[in-house]
Image (cartoon, rainbow, N blue to C red; front, top):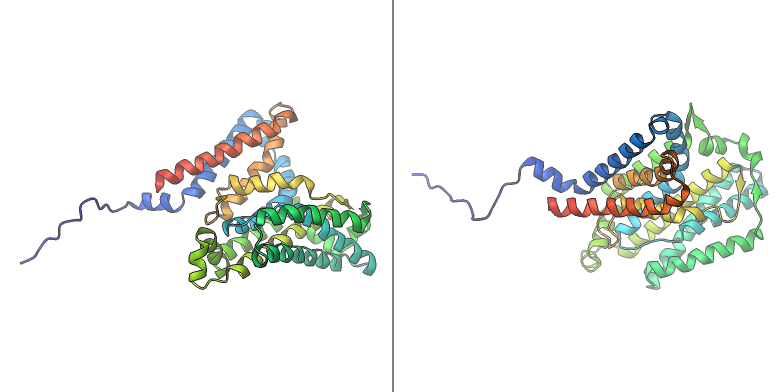
Length: 333
């Protein structure tokens, strides 16, 4: 004699579609926002946004801040923030210039540039995790510190880099693959690296837990100090790589080389769905968010508006994208 077991009152079996949308709510949100913005650009300026020339321009200019945004995403997921990366870009290029002038090797200059970026990240990590100062305060301070040190070391001068054009490093960082700027391929490669670190490596798992609940992370034995410091180091290295690509493509180093990338980088991270409170974020979201931010100014000009609308549209897009994320997250959860 069989006995039927009555279902527990209020219990429901989620459909596969519901389970999928619940798991991928953030990615769905940024995809919807990205497609809506791009459709608006295509409708408003079809001649521009149906031409491959505009996309080749995006492929060169967007990676300069998108590469930094990818690794900054991991810092923010862990519950910290880094506002000093724009000054790390400048200071790391001082390492490039001095090494290049001393050795005549562009390749060694790039190595020195990335090493300086790593040291700057380590410096930030030390004061945040060992001294115990909030990351916002530390990186505001080091933003001024690194920028001031850059000006002192180069005496405020810029350095032409035209003679680097014949080097292997120039082709590797500022050349083209066919008609596509090589910076875009660097962005793809760094996106893969960041995704693997965040989703398939212990560093990313530790970052999520640390950002979601620091006390629980410590009780679980997660090395929170090491995790957070490593993320600052990776962000510093990413900033240095982006700076070297930018300077080589411009054939010039100027002391405030990173000054224009603070807001686009932060906007790309938050438009992509990363929570300012930590514990939530995706590389996919930041990747699409970077191209949304990168396309806004060109889109504004293409549809016939003046540059005066740029900040207004930036703000509107950020609020709209974040609102879509929030609504979808509540709906699917």
